[in-house]
Length: 108
Image (tube, rainbow, N blue to C red):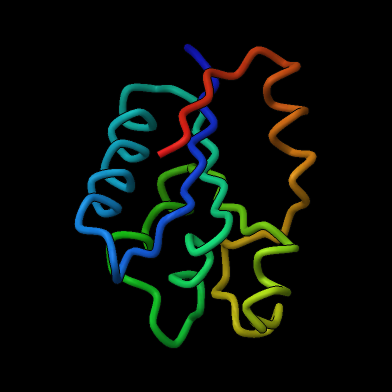
């Protein structure tokens, strides 16, 4: 199966299609693909454990790697202890690494 890197930059609370992006991640994982969801820019706003949407909470339990961009978190004042379990902080370098390894990449 293939490796997929999905990059989410939109705020789930402002874009009606973000939940469809989370569903795409689930569908790819259910089909046996390795999936990483990397949230950047306003995509990290949904990562706070006080407001995380239901559609996002079960992704790590499905084997999906859930990453939050360190710079985006810093710019929005979101601290590491505000993130729920299963969310890892990562640098933008992860995109370059994934591309170099041949992952199929979708900017959502």
